[in-house]
Length: 186
Image (cartoon, rainbow, N blue to C red; front, side, top):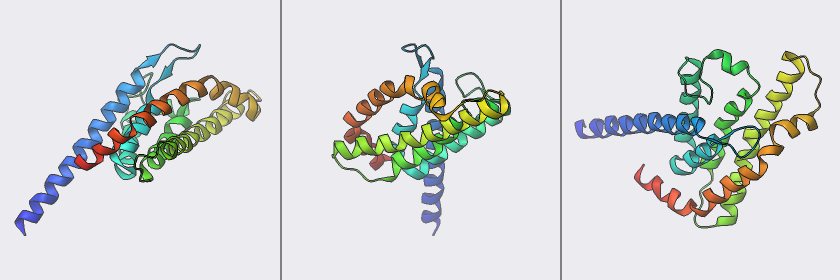
């Protein structure tokens, strides 16, 4: 009985450390910006999808939730800092979309079917952008006082990033078999 208890404690400690390490990956990805567009692009969506693929949906979702809690508590984990005020900004919807992005990218079991992996990752990113664009629309229309239609919000909050997102997804798809092998060790 004591051996089983020790195994459970070790597994729980390992899971806690993995989740904390995952938040470090997300923090680094938030601070890593690519100056390819007029608006800097972070590597957060790449990291969210990678974590989902490597850790599975439960652990990856836990990583994102802890990451959001860290940011809400004021830790400078987001691209431009942290704190509750960050959740009132125009981009906070994307942060909440990360939860579903991590969930869906880690939910489906995948072997070496690259097409299915690619489509799964597209599906996952759609949820990130859906939350992000809806919050951006709410923020612009109700908090900023600008009357903006959904197409204009798409032009502002998604269109400039679509090619970069496809590129990130293609990279993840290409290395997906190696990423899924990590699950055996986690």
